[in-house]
Length: 203
Ligand code: GAR
Image (tube, rainbow, N blue to C red; front, side, top):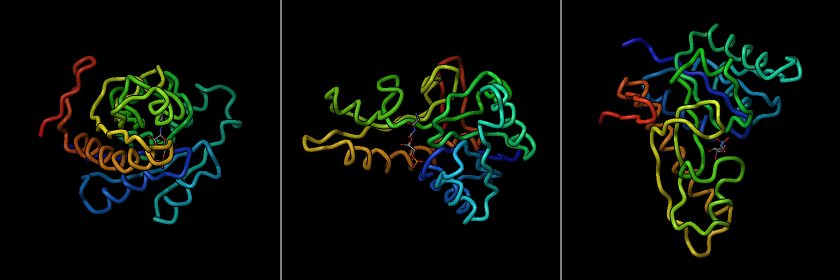
C-alpha cells in the first residue's frame, strides 16, 4: 500500500490536530503529517505544529482574490508535499470545488455533533438548546455543502441535566480526539470503502 501523507488544515487552537500528530508520531496511525495549513496567522495550531517540528504555513486569504484562488493555493501547498489525505481540524472556512475535486474522497472533517443534526457554528450549544439527550461528534468526507458528506464514524455523548455549553463541549472534544484518530487510522490502513453515501470501515 502506498504511504499515507497527511495535510491538516486548522483555523484555531488545534487540539484535534495535536491528537493526530501524536497518533502519527507514536505509530498508532501509520502515516506522517507533512504540513499544517491555516487561514489564520495567529492560529494556535500553527504554533503547536512548529513547536513539534512540523512544517506549518499561514496562507493569507487576502493575498488571493477569490475563494477558488485561495483553495488553488492550498492545493498547491498540499501537492508540493505529496499529501494523499487531507484532514480538516477546526478549519472554519468553507471550501470550494477547486479544493474538493483534486482530493475526491480524500478530505475528512470532524464536527462536534451527530450530523446531519446541528451543522454550522456552536453545534454543541445548538444541541443543548434543542434539548437532545444524545450529543456527539462525526467524522465525514467533505463535499461542497457545509458539514455534510458521507459519514465515516460517529460517537454519541449523553447530555447531562446540568450540562452547559462548556461542559458538554469538553466531553464531546475528548471523544473527537479519539474518533478522529480512529477514522484517520482506518484511512491510512486502507480499510475504508466509499459507495455513494455509504462508507464502510473494515475492522
Ligand atoms: C472542534 O470541536 C471541531 O469539531 C470543530 O471546531 C473545533 C476545533 O477545535 N469544527 C467544526 O465545528 C467544523 N464545523 P480544535 O482546534 O481544538 O481541534
